[in-house]
Structure formats: C-alpha cells, structure tokens
Length: 293
Image (cartoon, rainbow, N blue to C red):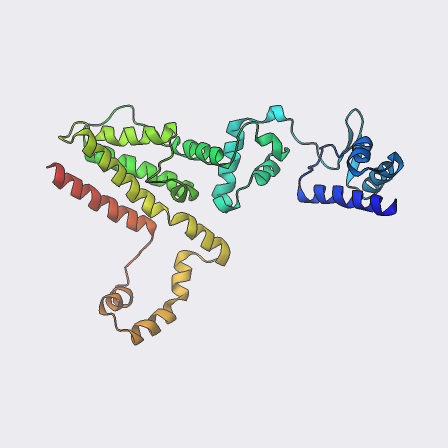
C-alpha cells in the first residue's frame, strides 16, 4: 500500500509542477484514483491528505480538491482575440520560438486545453497572429494619385509593423503566402497605388510581390537581432565595437582596400537595418519610375 500511495502522490505532484494541472483546477477525486490506480479508497484518501499537507492542494466547497493558488479564469472569459493578442505580446518579447500554448495559458491564467476551443492548433494561431499584425496597417481612404508617394507610404507602414513585431518577417512566406484577409488587403492596397499607371494587372502584381519581398527580406533580420541582444546583452553597435580589434587584425592579414577605407577612414559611416531599408526603398522606387516612364 505504501508503494502505491507514494506513486500516486508523485504522479499528481508531477502533473502540478509541470503545469498540466494549474491553480484552481480539480485534481483526480478519490474515486477516480481508485479506478485509475486500482487501489483502495483508503489509499486514495491518504494520497489526498499528503497533497494537502504539502500545500499542493486545497479543498474548495462545492468544487472538490483543487490545485492550490488562485482559481483560473472561467473559459467564458476567453476569446480568440484575447488569445491571439497574448500570443503576439509573448512573441514580441521573447521570439516566436518561445511561444507555446502552455505559455499563453499561463499568461491568461487558464487551462491549456481551454485554448483549443478557440484556436485549433499552432498553424491556425500563427495565421491569426499574422492577420492581426497586418491589420495594424491603415488603408488610406483614397489614393493621392502620386503612385510613388502612395507606394512609399505602403512600404513604410509595412516596415513599421515588421519592426513592432520582429517575428513577423521570418513567419510570412513569399512562395507559399498565408491567405489571411489583411495580407490580401495589403496586396490589394499596393497594387491599387499603380492602377493609374500604364502597368497591366500582372505587372502591378509583380511590383507588389517585389516590394513586399524587399521589405520582408530586410525585416527577416529583426528577429535574429533581437535574439542576439537577449543572448549577449549587447546592442548591435556595442557588438561591432567589441569586434574592432579582431577586424583590424583580419584586414592586416588579408588586405582589402575597400573595407579598410570604409571602416577605418569613413568615420561618419553608419549601418543598421533602417539605413538598409531607406537606401533600398529609394533605389527600388527609382527603378520602377524609370521603367514606368
């Protein structure tokens, strides 16, 4: 009996510590324990007493024996929108790789399984996150008639969203685009800026894809950069400064006159993703202007 009792206590303790049973959730009743473990009711009662003495469970009138701690919110407090917003907040802070259904449930103080009634799975969750993030882009009520200004505004709005959500760039696919309402709306908006030019709809679509791929390409470095800052505690500038002696030693061994001139004799040179975005966007629009003209 002692061996069975110890095994039951250990099993339920593991469920509590792993998060499978969260504060306020019911633990297996004495009758459930007798059925699952095949023990006498006295052994099940003794296991419940041990869990209470350890401070792991409490008896809640009208409910039964539950995990100690604040009761989770009722499932009726949940909504798909709240789950998606919480998932985005976690991914913004810690990266998409750290996002799990269990972590979302912990943030919302609900049972993990209750999430699946609103979000069927990980793929569905990521689609909803993409759609919500792109929904932050505001479609102008009307186009100005200046295709370059409108196209630039679209690109900058997209870049701002990618910066707010570093995980978004690496999540969206170019060759297998995620079909969400706001992703399609974005494409329609960009194509619409070119409607008054001589370009046909196929060319307008290709311009839209190339512009999106350019902004997304630069943005795909945002998530790795954020992860590197979390791991090293260094900003990009601090990391580059720390590599200065190593770089000087490298170019002394492998002479590279252009890099030497750039890094050692161009004190005002600055490089980051925003610089790259601004330079690339201007050149992209210059090229489209020549082509249209």
